[in-house]
Length: 87
Image 1: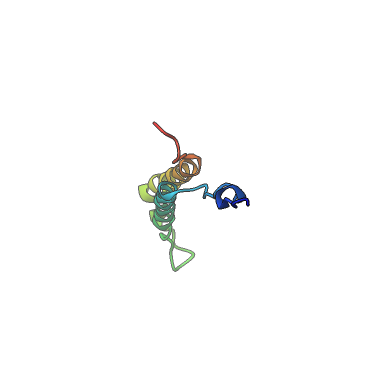
Image 2: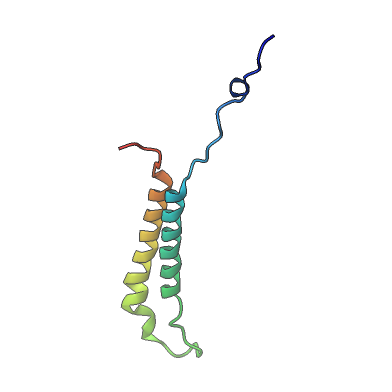
């Protein structure tokens, strides 16, 4: 009689593409993007005839877009990161 070997009948074990390290970097990138958009908001005026120069502050013109771009860079890194790479 033949013995059925269950290991031979089963195919390769399915494995996820992303690991814990990838998701950690994705969360950090998403937090940077969210913080950038929060910093970019506001600075408006209730009266449309009054100009508020606060919309041109350093926070809204330089800091917030830089955080958004940094977050997008981190997201790209998280996608391209190979956690299975052996050093």
